[in-house]
Length: 126
Image 1 (tube, rainbow, N blue to C red):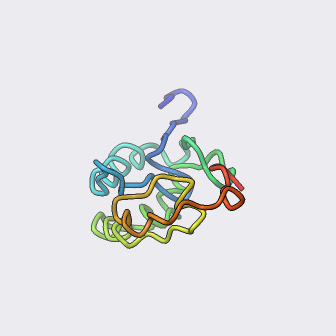
Image 2 (cartoon, rainbow, N blue to C red; image 1 turned 120 degrees about the vertical axis):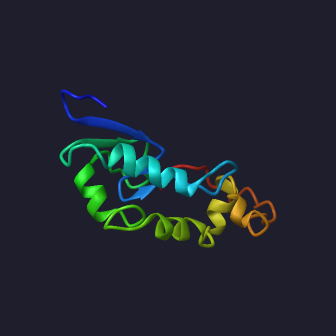
Image 3 (cartoon, helix red, strand yellow; image 1 turned 90 degrees about the horizontal axis):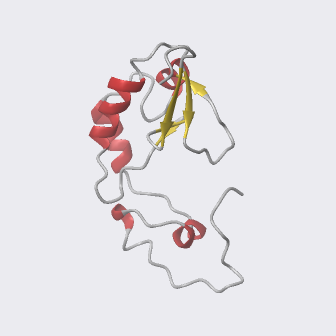
């Protein structure tokens, strides 16, 4: 957090209208919720937040925007509501199954046959 310019880097914890995954080994939705609410959402409303990455090309948001509009963490959502959202079955597409690691909540379902080279697409933005 830069106190003189009201900016913070949120890395892979808080994204623009999203948050980091908690379904990998060691993930903890409650810890993520508390960390974001206690540390990030306590910053001034106008504080600019820079996520570690974004798949839609968005590079900056504000504390107020995420506290208001974030579908997992904002809008008055409770810790239990966020935990339930993060525990819901994943909706991985076939393409993602072989381009990104499988989360533990759907590991068995995410073990498709190895795709033919003509079907393989490298990870990254589309």
